[in-house]
Length: 92
View 1 (cartoon, one colour):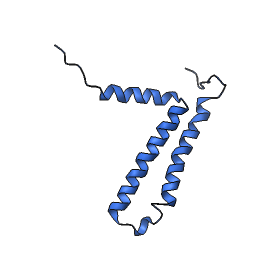
View 2: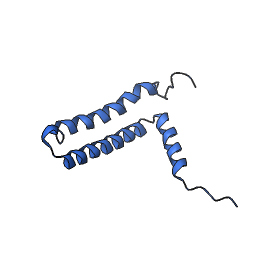
View 3: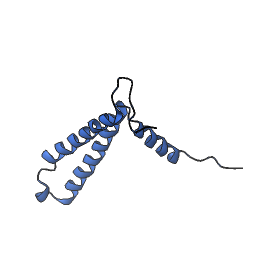
View 4: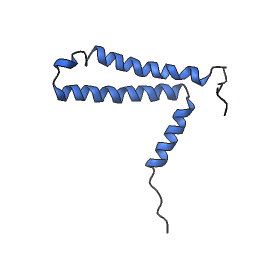
C-alpha cells in the first residue's frame, strides 16, 4: 500500500480524516460551551456524568463520520474488535 490512497473521485483518504476529527471536535466544543461551562463550580457526579456522556457521544460521532467517509483504518479497527468479541468455538 502506498502513502496515499486515492478514492474514485480523486480525493485522498488522508484529506478526509480531518473531517471526522472536526465532527469530534465540534461535539467537544459544544460540551465545553454548554454543560461543562461551569466546570469549577459543578458538583463531582454531574461533572463526571457530563464528561462521560461527552466522550461517548464524541466517539460515536467520530465513528459515524469515519464510516460515512469510508476511512479504511476504521474498517480494520472494527474487524479487529469484532474478532475479539466473537465467542470462540470450543475445540473437540
